[in-house]
Length: 242
Image (cartoon, helix red, strand yellow):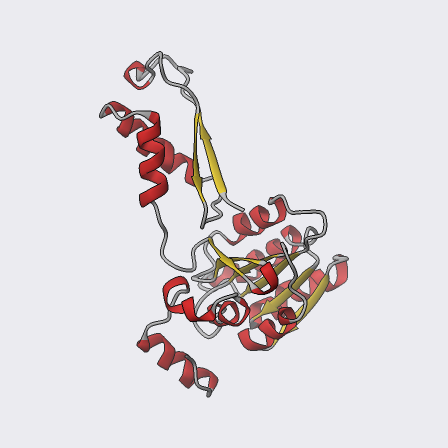
């Protein structure tokens, strides 16, 4: 499972002809450890145009992007899960929640694979909190085999709608550890689990830590794993966090 972007050069408006040499051909850029939404293509396209202006070849541009582009942990990271499953870890925050849910719904999976979501509150929306969570319920209404929700806003606004209108199994978990329990014994080969939510008091990355194939890599792969955050989480959950 990878992110792949295809770029083609064309002269739609007749401007910037220096970006459009005759020898240019469409080429692909592929990221093996990230699953990126379509809007990243615009940023890559801008970088590619600058590189073309500087005289770089398509192969050089693609290689440089694939080698050097990276996001901090917890942003659209693709992590190996238990039993050869996959975790799409976007647990850093709830930004772009809608696009990540749509992305997870649309990713091609093997016929035997199942699609899961662990979703936490979208914080900091103030008076619009209700609207955002109800819209999420409409977006996530179908396309998943199981959705586990965490957080008071999810419980108040999203959970009732999904329980009433969705054929998907919906579970409301008390915290990230209870949420991980729901997936721990059902993840199978090629299954996909999207993890997405706000940070404070939710800390869904701790669910990812439980469900990932190699928890010893948590400090390198997951967000909020330094001593400060581990102490904050230990105090909040009243349990040791490592």
